[in-house]
Image (tube, rainbow, N blue to C red; front, side):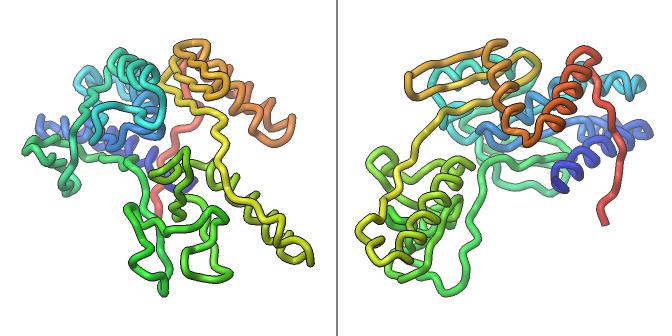
Length: 295
């Protein structure tokens, strides 16, 4: 995506700028990276940055001392990967620390001015790069009763994805807040929830067009197929709810790669992606590091 490309370019540009910096404070600020949010996105991003620090960046910028590069992962709750099992949370934090990431739990960020990140406890971190991975807020359209909007700008819907108090108006995915017995505080804001809601809504709307369809309207029930997160090279965690299984380390990493490979459309695309992965694995390198500025 455009955001991912711009993030990569921003990080690389910081190291380009660092080559000409003599002030130690400014140099350290350019080399530090702060990731806010210890969910799957924040954990995977921190691990990827740690791998870049170890294998890629020292070859591209031999003039810089990457022992001074700090990667901070800030999480407001007591643990990383809070949506996954306790074992996955413990292992993910252990893996990140092994990779050299500084994990700070129970840490809430209060302000960031582009140079300094300030925490609610008064501590500060100097960094020219702060990456937000601590969740999203829904974009609520005008006309929705504010009483229906809950935490995270999510709109209350019933079990058929219909906005409470309205007819023929529905919400699905991240913007929808639905309670069901297994999820009394709403569903996690992940893609499988949105996809399953979309399937249910399409089927229900199709039934409504049929004369006898109303009596066959179904209610939403989220089926959790499991959760995965890759932390770094040969390191990942996988939770399977039914049967209740947990995998960590190299086995979990292979499971993660296999499932993501199968989600790619087309045999040809899978082949080229797989070959690219093999190349990156053995060379410990990336084949494209262009810096393109967004206008």
